[in-house]
Amino acid sequence: MSNHLKGLLMTIFAVVILSPDSVLIRLVEDASPDVDSWTVLFWRGALYAVGVSTLVFLKYRSKTISEFKNIGKGGLLIGFFSGISTGTFVFAIVYTSIANALVIISTGPIMIAIVAWVLLREKSSLVTWIAMVIVFIGIYIVMSGSVGGKSLVGDFFALITAVMMGFTFTLTRKYKDINMVPVNAIGGLIAAIIAVFMANTIAIPKEVVSYIIAMGVILSISFSLITIAPRYMPAAEVGMIMPLETVLGSLIAWYIIKEEPTMNALIGGSIVIVTLFLHSWYSTKQAHKLEKI
Image (cartoon, helix red, strand yellow):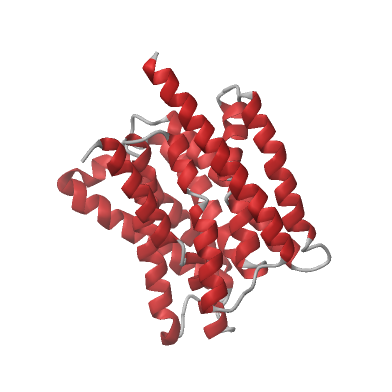
């Protein structure tokens, strides 16, 4: 199996298993309305940290502690941004529709370009800037359907999640020579620590335990694979596959919890996803041309 195919399969598998994540959060809220969102975040973060740590241990055994130490200060900073995005994602799903949240969060690749320009002084091409404008028009269409309701709050949480993802992946790329999989555990731990001080209680009813555990397993496997995949294929190609989660996640929400996307979400989401796909396709094509030179 070639490295490219390995990276491709990793990314597709990661996106597919991540797709039900948002529905699981909503199922917990629906199954037990008394469960505080901070409580959900605590268990989500704690199990995420435990899951990733377990995967790192299975891979590195006696070198596990060394792998965590190797992430350095840069890894801790990435972990901080990851922890914040873990929290804002939960509140985005709670306060707005799943379709809205996933569409807005799918703009992560554009946020990466913006953050890379600010932090690393990486110049974006004209095509990228055009894509940014079109994507933000799509986001405006999605969010305009939420004006006047609490959904707008959730939309902003989703936007913050996308920005935090921009910082996370930009810094991960900056430290690409270091194994950053352990950073995911740090992010989960940070989210859990913040949540434990905010939650009324960390006790959860037995009927939602399976949903909570499923979240931890999904996050651990999916984000570990997404962190590793760019080692085997261009990051632009990874970005080309990521919008698939928006489509699958929205369809799962539609089928399981009967949450039908609004017309604004469908129109704006289509603009965002098509633009992101075309931009990633173009970026990949340009990267292949440079490799041949």
